[in-house]
Length: 349
Image (cartoon, rainbow, N blue to C red; front, top):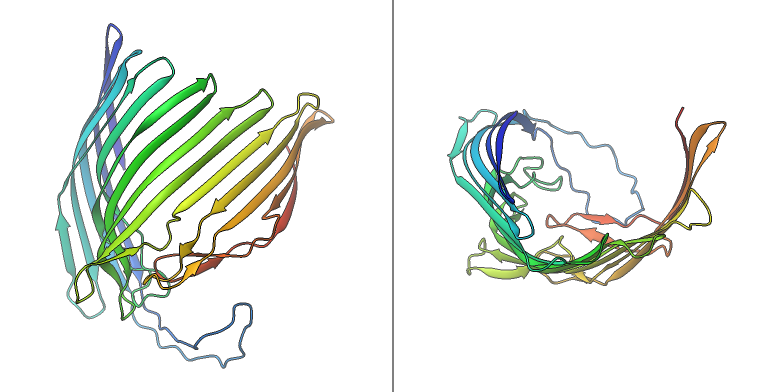
């Protein structure tokens, strides 16, 4: 649940708003109880003929999480000058894990959380911004190929800092360029396939985006992210080992276009081009995937039939049938979807 109360007041060209917030959650989840069987390496798409195994299940493990957070925040806007936001929170977090036949294991922490951000209008078209945030978040759960699969990861402290420039090319079209750094704990599979904290991960990068209407008919949303995802693995006996994280894409370029010809009312054409750089597929950085480009395109037509609005849409995905896979830190992989087409008709009665 969440409770939020705000109060604002105006001082000439400045508007001030103060917020008081309170949040609480109580969650219980179970995991485990199953049994893993390994059948050796297989070829994707070829299903071996194996006898049905006999599984011996056990009682699942219970994880209970209780968290209460209270905070105070301020937001100020000064017309044609800039804006400022600040917040501080105190969180009380308790996590209890109960395994079958064992005494409950409890973990308690009560961190201070805070963030601040601001923007300065350097001119009528150019603004500079910067922000910092210290957060407290749960980083998912153990993957299906872990010994402790589905186990919830305890909440951990994270931090993010970013800064950049925003330039208004003209009304309705702007470009944003910024740098950022995200720090958080690194969770992965250890040598005995237990999903646990192995060190820290740091994402440093640059992002550039262009969004808005180029003409009355053409709209573009395009951007690129240049990322340096680094793992500091402290789980090895020889000391810290610096690796490139699996999952985040070092270079991602995405361009979305939509064209509405003025001569044909209700018609819209759209396309998406995405370029993914080469990336590692193994946690030890010994194997790498090549880069890949995918293209989507579609057409949408909205009309009226017997006074009923009707929308027809044809969409093509991965038109070049690019073949690749998406890896993650747990060594699981997800193949790209093959070329496909979708056609739909929607009507509002």
